[in-house]
Image (cartoon, rainbow, N blue to C red):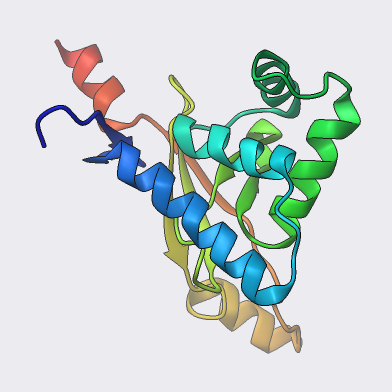
Length: 165
């Protein structure tokens, strides 16, 4: 891939430019199909998160929006994040009180996140909350799981490689 920037997606190498373009195209297509409004601010927030591949807080996003010529009031960022999270385009990383672009925007899924404690890189994987020990416990209690947040903290391969060098 000469000439194209390749950076970690989660923790693996990929074509970053294509990744961002695919994330935005998937959001635009879904919004058009479902009659949702992907306003310029919402689109820019999604683009910023897709470019970063790490968790960003609302105020970091607000700073980036300001630099890009958008509004500088916190509600601007929060309204965009609320919309994007409600429709599954981004996920909230509870541990960091920050957001990350969804790695699987066209799939209904329960994500699990691996968060690097050194660089805040985030990898998204699928989880199956209804299976395993949590699912067994829920069934035994007569509880129906509707949503889970699975977050694991550790050290990503890039930071581990730096620490060992």
